[in-house]
Length: 421
Image (cartoon, rainbow, N blue to C red):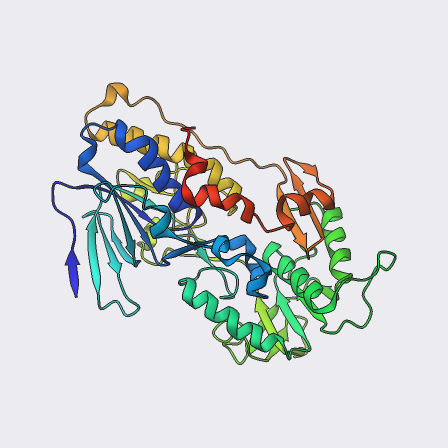
């Protein structure tokens, strides 16, 4: 059943996506922007999220092993609870998924169920697209909602009990962190004077198409990561990709299935594995947008300094993994949110005829210095910050202890955005 929830007098600021970028934008607008607009009561922030809970997605490589690895009440946070601090007159949370954006008529079509039979049309005065990206493996993110993710973890954990081999494709952080966590959990770690764990209980193999793992880090750090992986029974195979999987749904539709993997090395080379985890990048969640608004990689094209998606009309923006504004990374999102919201505020003031108080655009500039932290199990890690190599202990202290879980409480609740920046 279709419904239209908007009237012509409403000025809806619609945010698509309930993860880092979407929730942060909502909090900043509600705390620092709406009250400074003329006639604030005419504006409403509407947050649309396919999941009813937010999750610390970077924690998935460890969280997929067991519910005991993290306090579940911190790993998953109910969006209704964290946004209950705001009045219903100024904020609304919609549990649904965007299926189409009509940027000409300025409407968003939302599916409220899994079959698109119950839909809602919401008109927008401003639109912020923060729908993120989906991972190849349903183990590594909220591709659908928290129920689907937890179900995938349950199936994987049951299969893990009897697994005698695991194969992971992808040499980026997700693949390497997952390999390290599984390796230490299943095999332990070699002694401090031993460079490699001989005869691991469950051999784990990582295939990467690149000449090194962790391509955003310098080769010496990638080599150190490879050494740490060897200590927990993980072997890295470089310059080799997995070109086909049998059965086709192994690792994606069925995370507990055994698989036969065909390698790119030629000669019909194949391997058998008890568990297969694809970790080869992400697919932007932008299928609801017109193709002409997207870059070749599927992300929404924006002005990288202002985050406006000008091709989609006035007061349309995109941020996070669905946007071309920067490389996908949480630290880029957090740096961009104040800029984005300042420009939204400016555009709303201009639209309200308040040009004299609108001020100038703020500009976002991505920090291109080497910056990535990659835990390898519970006690080791490699990384760099602001271009400087970081010791393993510091990587563990900042990220490896709990995969940023210590930072998300203030972010989800909005306390991190209590002061306007």
